[in-house]
Image (cartoon, rainbow, N blue to C red; front, side, top):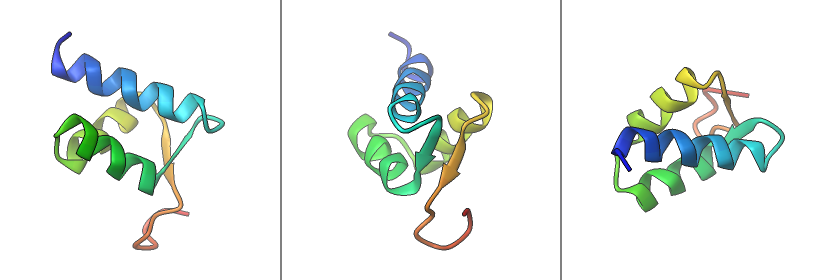
Length: 61
C-alpha cells in the first residue's frame, strides 16, 4: 500500500472510532506508529475533513 493511502486509512479509522474527530494525542501516536511527520497526519485529516480535537498545545478545541 502506498504510504499516503496508509496514512489516510489510519487517520480515517482512528477518527471513525472516535465519533469522526481525531484527538491530538491519537494523531501523534499515529505519526509515531507510521513513522511520518505530524504534518502528514494533519494533511490527511484536512483532506478527509476530519477535525483534530483536544490539542495539547491549546490550538484546537
